[in-house]
Image (cartoon, rainbow, N blue to C red):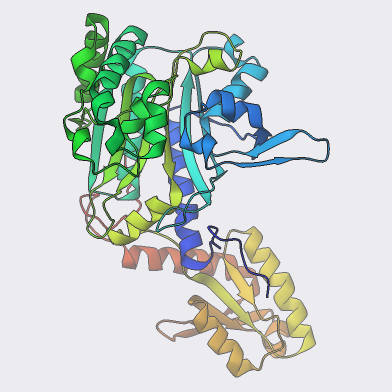
Length: 445
């Protein structure tokens, strides 16, 4: 038997509906903030990630899927979304458009890492990138977009951690301080961190192997090495977050080891019981140097990304009442071939009118068709009878109350309109948007 590759999973059934619901909320929020969707290739030139992500990153040194295609070109399955978006920004000369350019994506990434709960080798992320603005306001907006997506999905246990790396001068001062601090203790760290010491000491701070090393607890923090301009900029970001009523915690342990990151960095945690110690569901920051690394014009940038698998897990653990549709409006039953033909015709007409309709496709008995309607949670069922059809009539049954009516075929759309709206009204709440029921309250962001 052929099975799926290790570290990949099939998304189907209820889980697939949750994923699609997340997609819908993401699209809705991004539209309100005027972000435009972008789709970049799943595979890119290997050079994009070795240059763009950086040779000291675990993503490049250990986790990328690299291969040569039939033309002997070096190709890599994308491990993250930012580099591809920036490459597209440069290649398509988006910098000539009205700035800033606000983009978002939703797609699969590939990393060869040890599979674990919520972390797969094939992962799906949504994210956003803003290119062309260095304003602290756009930093706070990116954070607020992420927070509001999580809130719209129904998550409550959201914790925002922010920090700043400062500008190039501040970062260089901090880098020197880290080297001075870690050098006497470097033998207590893993081999990777020993190599990182002089290449990129910030990577030591988020090492997965040495995360519990006591030396890390007293390491210098970025805030202690900020120059005046970087301090003022960080104060502005916090001021805008306060204005937008985004609660946050300044966490000096939030860093980014990649050389092109500067100023604002942040992580968003889901503080949910059972989610585990690694409860980060989204992260981002400012990367003012990336566009130049990829041979583009000097362009400030800031972005964010979130894994959908871990987000779906958080929604389930927090027992969020997700409004996914798990029923159908009508199931059509029949016995004869003529009735089957009419079922095919009527299904098509009703579907085009906006109803969720299904019928029989495996020649089951009428009794078995009734059971199938129940399995599909059909709200209404209709048994097509040749005598009724000849009289231009149809018998419809409420599958919950078991009440039956014979109506004119010409009136079936009006009938379903009235009945289904009545069902919605009957089961709606009177919370006026103040509860956690996730009714359609047209909630404002």
